[in-house]
Length: 237
Image 1 (cartoon, rainbow, N blue to C red):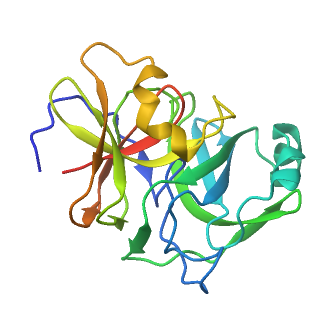
Image 2: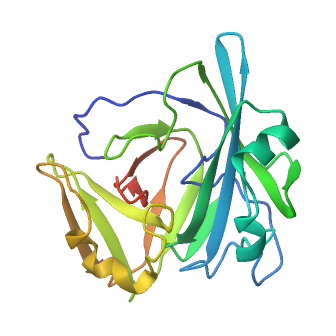
């Protein structure tokens, strides 16, 4: 792995989170598959429960269940999530679209636990335990975070990848784009994203077409970052 000289903010994560998925359960081909993912829509709901000085955050997403139906998603509110789940706060993290082609998972399988928010069923993908008041993954832009997980993201030859490069030359490959900050953002817009981002000094955005498959193995620990449109990226070691 390249020498990474930035200071990482540690977060206890039991699976892949937020802008990120966890260990996906096997599923039939189609909308519930973990293959052929490029530009496939998904959503996450991330409720947090405060108990004394500890906040437990639960990450649910629609992968292997559905593609986050627009009409149903638009009906969900934070207040409704808190009432149904018993949480004190919740993030509605979506809609998002995958930018890799395939996800391979290893290690422990999912818990199999599901929850239906409004009328959308989702699977539990991760649990984050932090001191109350501590920002969690994805809450700050252009800030690298550690995520404990075992996944391989596969980007196929001939496909483009979208890259954030930090001032020290570390490259992060986009894993999903978001329609949260910019609700009109589409896959076709990604090659020209540099003109839309408010990049900090020394950061760069670029596009590259792969001549061979790229497999990004987290090896138990991924480094992730969000841009200011809430698109998410993983460090390419």
